[in-house]
Image 1: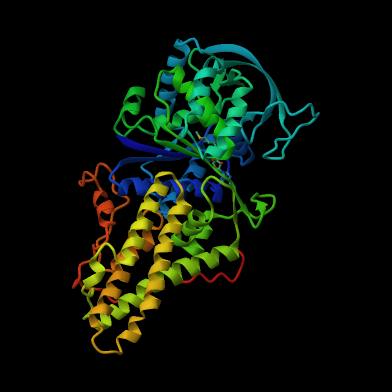
Image 2 (image 1 turned 60 degrees about the vertical axis):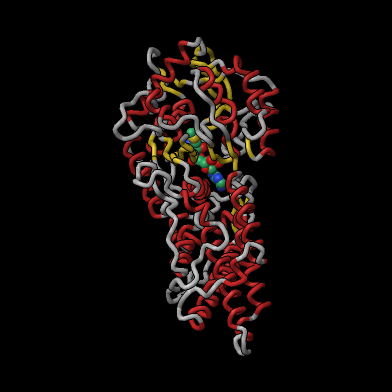
Length: 527
Ligand code: MSP
């Protein structure tokens, strides 16, 4: 079965910021992990290009909406390439094939009797593209997220009969594991408990959208169209735009990874739409937290937005991925602090992990003819570092399965810390000065090199670049966390799990000349 995972489809009203990069980086780590395990992965990202917000932005820039979308979606494409994101698809909702999928889906929902005409009155946030719950009688209410005035709307629209799905949605969200982390479930439960109301799925007088078949003057509400982008994205290049063809490519999704602000759309509206069309439901919706910067919300007006392209250029992939995945529990809010960022990167990656490998392979090369020393007693599974490696591996694998990137990163780091501690305790550099200790020194160095090999393998989904440099330094083959199902190897990373077993390093195999695997991060100015 295909493991389909998705990022949100990003609005193209503005260039990408760190919030979008955060979800995409986390999904990239998850996609790589699943590929390494041997799963057939379909990793979907994309751009959400219709709606009033985009139309207004384009107008303000003096561009046609299409020209504006082309320009911004190209920035997303380029950014993901520069970050070497391993996405299999980048769907754009202005793709003509998407329109066909939306039409077919709508026909199924309409045939169920789930589309009715109605009058929509309420306060609308264009930035959220969402009607807000009654803003407590204020005269000029503001959007609590965007702090901008809401707009009063009163239109005749088409409605989706969400209210019909009350019981099914209640049962769905009660399923453990559907909404994760489970702390986010309450909020959705409260919303559903108040009683689901039908929601409008069309707009009148909004040309920048997909026309609703059979309902002149209506275009689809941007969210109705956008969520279906996950299905259009399943199509292969050569497929005709047919709903069933798309679904057969990898539906249902194993997980939709999203920010907490769009949980309701994914955990309530979207499943109800799918139920209406008679289609399987996604297995999981994971709502991560928001990133702030030095305690403040990132925003253009504050001038403190972190540009992911600049961050990459100045700090490199490994550093940024490590900080975001290792420091912030995925699911909770996180704060980007520059000092902490540099400290973690330098302590964890340059000192603990990088130096461990460097000094150990230097000693091994010097005393054992540039090869991996004989394992001796370190070959056994009861060696203290073998036990530590086993512990780290089982913790990290279980954590990655649950999208607990921080736990996986910490377990991996802990193994490197244990190996450093072991090396310092055994002090092979002192032992070498005594007679008859060569065997012990060999075993100790073997154990530490072997631990470093396992650290590198565990880092492969999180920090593919550093993992590669470490494995090169150990003279080890690289696991391919980016192999596509269509590639020759049927199960691309299948040997990764097997290679995580203690004892994989071959005594006598050559050790290449070491060079630092991780440069220290020196940032003189604020990012
Ligand atoms: N277009 C919709 C999604 C449609 S999915 C079918 C959308 N787009 S968005 O560009 O506004 O937001 C995309 C994602 O970025 C959301 O998951 C949102 O939570 C996330 N983030 C936006 N700002 C963020 C932070 N400051 N921190 C973390 N994530 C944030 O919503």
